Length: 509
Image 1 (tube, helix red, strand yellow):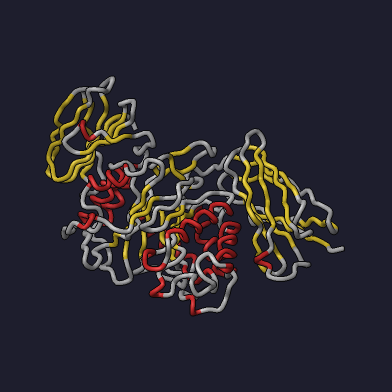
Image 2 (cartoon, rainbow, N blue to C red):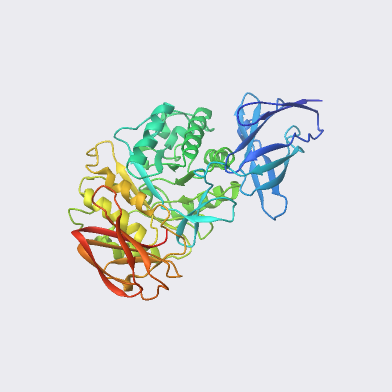
């Protein structure tokens, strides 16, 4: 009879050894867990024969007191070791059981008590409500509005995995740089590192199994970002002209690619704080059916859903697929200040085109990109348009050859500062109430007005039940709220100190 060694790991601080003989199932020692932070178990399986990455062992976690359950796979971690992970999405007690055709990985069970996370900056998985991005807070059922904007800095932060510095302190500097520009999500491009750490092209390696070092680097980055209240947006692949695809590793959705997809789901799936796009120039090297198959399979494997997208292609209608866009302007000649949607109205139309799923401009709005010239004014205004339209996602930053830096990064940061606590899932557009743009809550208790190149803005607060406090912010200057006092519930014109781009928050925030 074989002997199974079960190694507990809890908060990376202690371990417990449990011995089970042969096919005897082990009831693992109960443990406490913290909401939104993953727990990990290790099992030794010394009798495995064949490719260890092809061993299938599933773990089902069930929440006591609700119908919620989550099933994930174990993943091979090297040295005859398999691991599995769990992240609590509801407070209270959970139970789990393992099942596998492998006799050393099946029949084990355990209990977990999920307690609140004491850090208010730590949140759960990014998801959506209708066509709005949302993020889980508190218990799984509670969602808050989320502004989904990705930041890329390939000028300063380019490592073996594109956009991911090799050293932990450099990745923290990348997160610092993103925060300096008002972003909490950074871009990481993996390509054939999935199979061999350091390989970009599929003809640069001969592996058909996931690379353990690559996954260690990725999970460290995702965990470090999440610990800071940040996130990572991955691109799985690039394009075939660069050979940044799985085509040379058995093909798209071939055996090696499927093995990789299962491994991504098992190892990264339980970790909060990441989303994934398939790559770029997809019309040149993929077919829609292949992209649909990829997203459907990956969602089926993951016990915790993550936002997936394929630039320029509409993935199947199911939970947590994003409508992603790869071009702008509908063929209209873009101005010298634009690389993005033609105007605010185009953002609105895109966002309204599908009310069931969130929307993301996944073409990168990099600063002064050749031929497009998205300058500082255009960048700032596009960020405002996206939120005022209702919550369109966007992509910003620098290519390796981009001009660097942004001349006024604080303008981007102030968009984030203004909207903190002011963007709500139930807000609706109400442009009929102003000569600019307006978002408001259905109870007419909170409004945000926005107008460009103006010294005055007309607002209609007739539906408000009482006078409302108001502040104005010049979006081009250092962030400072100008107290406008109480505005009466009526139509009125607000006179402003200078002619510029203004945002006005009305109501109690």
